[in-house]
Amino acid sequence: MVRQLTAADSKRLLAHFIALSEDDRVLRFGQRTADIVIENYVRGIDFVNDAVFGVFDSNLNLTGVGHLAYLPARGDDEPRTAEFGLSVLDTARGTGVGSALFARAAMRSRNSGVGTLYMHCLSHNATMMHIARKAGMDIHRDYGEADAYLTLPPADSASILAEMFEEQVAVFDYALKRQVRHANTFLESLMPSL
Ligand SMILES: CC(C)(COP(=O)(O)OP(=O)(O)OC[C@H]1O[C@@H](n2cnc3c(N)ncnc32)[C@H](O)[C@@H]1OP(=O)(O)O)[C@@H](O)C(=O)NCCC(=O)NCCS
Image 1 (cartoon, rainbow, N blue to C red):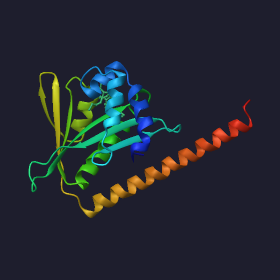
Image 2 (image 1 turned 90 degrees about the horizontal axis):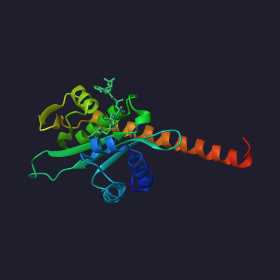
Image 3 (image 1 turned 120 degrees about the vertical axis):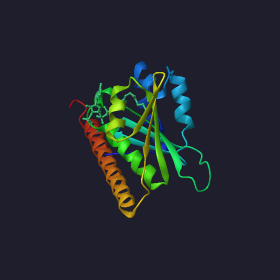
Image 4 (image 1 turned 90 degrees about the vertical axis):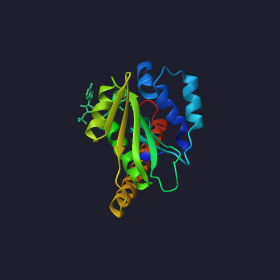
């Protein structure tokens, strides 16, 4: 379930990025990234103009996060371009979280008038290269880095409805997890020895 995040999720977003290993931070941000840089990055996320997506586990920790940033349009009639970056905690990898985040970003891009979805990664990032190839992205490699491009068709009523439905289901799933978590906390407070 991929839900769109808001500024209210910032604390959990930060915890997600801080939990990434040094190597994963290099893969995600293209360079070694100290905690303070991550804190500034999260503080600077524009939740209004960009779209940030997350996948939550049953404890409401963010196991996967994707950030879709819109690049400035070249002209009024030019289709927009958006850049996508994502990360999944190593405990949740290989279960489709990364692919689900990517699919959601592609859907949002299409529905918001983006003609080209772009990703920049290190070319030795075999998993990301696999996801990009599977999505039919055009990949250009240069000096150990890779740029991947996906050309998107214009939105139609089916793509808009599909995204609305997916978001509603994800919001419902999140609310359910939160209820279960509150109930568990309440029960634990009544029976601390359990
Ligand atoms: C890249 C990343 C987001 C993938 O997340 P994930 O949840 O494990 O991805 P998924 O489970 O959806 O898909 C992984 C796919 O890659 C394949 N894969 C895994 N390791 C692979 C490898 N070494 N080489 C090739 N393919 C590989 C899996 O078999 C799976 O393929 P399938 O969907 O055809 O079955 C995650 O590994 C990550 O966060 N890495 C660190 C940060 C990063 O690299 N971000 C991308 C920079 S933009």
